[in-house]
Amino acid sequence: MHFQRFNLIYLHVPKTGGNAIQAALFPYSDDEKALIGHQDGKDRFDVRGDATPHKHATLAQYAERIDVSAYRLAISVRHPFKRAISFYFSPHRWMKKRRGQWVPTEPEWNRSKFISFLNDIVPTSDFLKLDGAIRTPDFIIRHENISADFRKLTDALELPPIELERVNKGRAQDDLLRSIETDVELRRIVEKHFRADMETFSY
Image 1 (cartoon, helix red, strand yellow):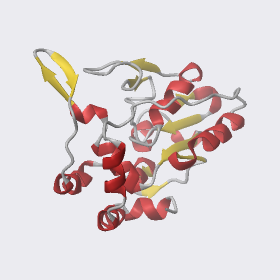
Image 2 (cartoon, one colour):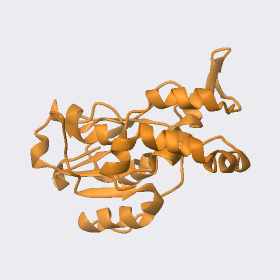
Image 3 (spheres, one colour):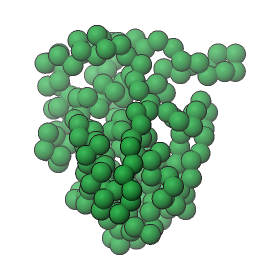
């Protein structure tokens, strides 16, 4: 998300609370909300602008359009294990087209498929890469501390207090999530897979 008047770029890493952040910041950005396919405009939407090619644009993609060295950088992050679980159960993954209409379906947990799915998730640290180096962001909004960290950003931008709404909640049941999150071996596998993120963001 691009904010020329603040000299700021916000990088929305999937499953880090970014939909709520972007929804709150739209009035101050240079971008517009766009709808594609089954997107509903609230829980699911895209973001487009002269500098922003899509909602989950990386720093390198912004660098193809603007001089990113002139901008401050904000990014939302999340512990890799929680992020991967949220991604697996993300509503968009369980939308199916039936008789020309997109309808939500009940998610199915499969441990082996989840482990294979890790290869489809772009590491958070990759969003900060430019010419092979990871740029240090000016603002980090941790999902684990999202309200307070977001407030630090809005205070720095001298914006009025903004309450974040919870949007795009995953479709997994709470008891299923608890059983997955307590799988110590699975957590170890995910943390090893996303070792760069664990180190970059001190998880």
